[in-house]
Length: 242
Image (cartoon, rainbow, N blue to C red; front, side, top):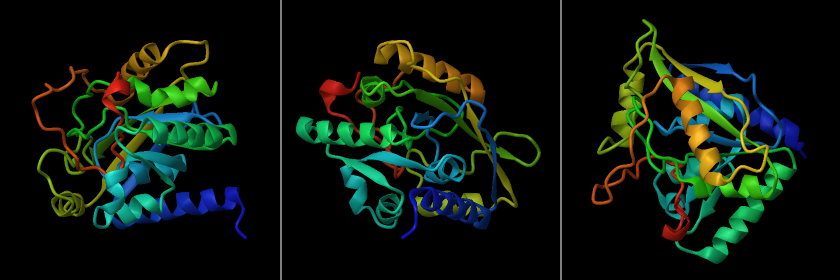
């Protein structure tokens, strides 16, 4: 049987191979990585999970509905995704315990606290409740900045998977580039000194904005539609969304 360490290496190798087939090269700054950290990242595309897995093989937290999405649901299930049922406090407790157990074993668990994807040029409000399992378990939070770049050094919009962009349109845009650079930048660990989740979320958001060279924008209006494009979108109950 394959050991966990070997399985994680295979997971990383598979992610790198998939990205290479799409013409994407990963540049990762792993200066601040620590075992058993909750990876908190900005969210641009369905390929974000593979960029993270290439550098930091992780389990991911996603809303339960994603499991039934064509292709993306299958890919999510194959990437150690923890599926969270919306509005179920009982199930949320089970998920939190599962996250804490993985972190306690030195595994990384990744969340996208914006709750949706963007075009990669700004950073939305962070849902702080998604950080609570790590803080309750005494595990660190690792803010990770993701960005995509053309070979000429310009920020690329090709990987964006927001709004009404379909999986096919996103993939064709990526394949239409000869080569793209995916940059993953880790920033200093947070939540090590008893800070509450709102403070850690705000600090993580600022660190990611700096690492990805992004402006901060306010949360979208409640009456605007929220994209359900990306496979790894996290969902919390309304009572836990702060």
